Image (cartoon, rainbow, N blue to C red; front, side, top):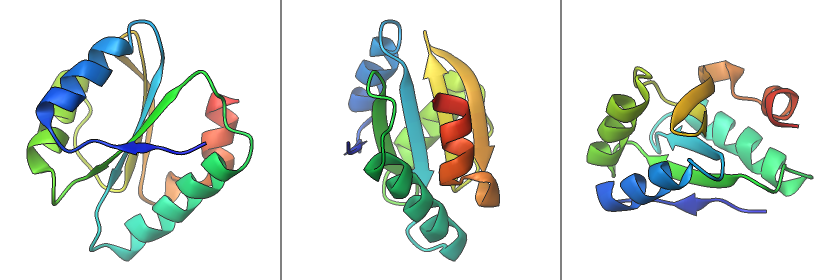
Length: 112
């Protein structure tokens, strides 16, 4: 399974609205940060295994898509950090983790 990168606020609005019927996992990634590179690898390893398949997985590059990142923080009430993962169901934050807490094991423990 793979993720889809979103780059516009409109894409975010659509997928956030869709979380009413299908849960959503957002990975916020800084392309200049080594901690975020590690978290991205962990997220990719989770998706490369046997991820829960009734969830939409999206990636937001926080530097390149700052308006999207800011809108996610506004809509979810989750203060921006990166790297950061947010699990959303029915437009509500269920779980979030950041920095070194974004691991394949941690993601699997929450989602599986």
